[in-house]
Image (cartoon, rainbow, N blue to C red; front, side):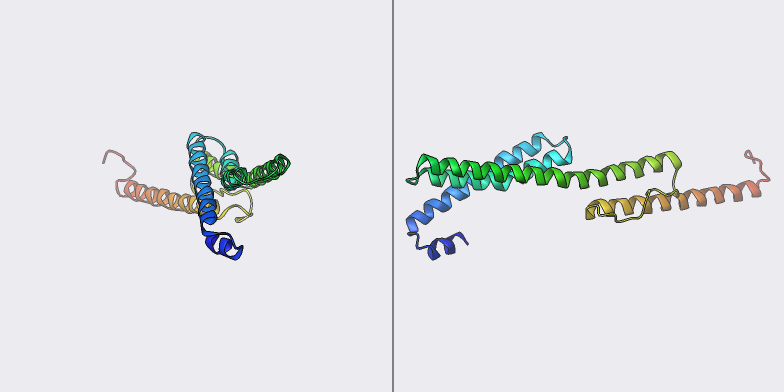
Length: 178
C-alpha cells in the first residue's frame, strides 16, 4: 500500500524507500515499547492496558512522521503543529480506551459477582442479576454463559450424588455401618 501511495504521489524510489524505512522502524519501535509496557502492566486494570494499547498506533505514526518530517526542510512552526496534532490524537485515543474500559470492567465485575454468588449460594442458583447479553464483550458473555452451565451441571451432579446416598441409605435401612 505504501509503495502504491508513493508511486501515485510521484515520489522517487529512493525517497520512498527512506520513508518506508522510517515508518517500518517507527512501527517496530512502537511495538517494542508498547509490548514492554503491557508486559510490565500485566497485573493492572484492563482500562490501563487498553489505553496503552490504544497509544501503539499513535506512537507508531508519531515516530515515523516525526522522523520523516525532521529530515525534510520544514519550518520549526510546522513541526510544532505536527506535535500538537499527534498529542491530540494520543489524548483522544486514551480517552476512548478509558471509556471502552468502563464497559469491559462492568462485564468483568458481573463475572466476579456471578462467581461469588456460585460460591455463596451453591450450584443451581440464579447467577446473573439480570438478563444475559447486556452488551458485554463477546468473550466475557461466553464466559458468563459457561459459568451458568457449569453451575447447572454441578447442581445436577449434586442431585445425582444425593440420590445415590438416599438409595444406599434405603438399602441399608438407614444404617451407615451396614
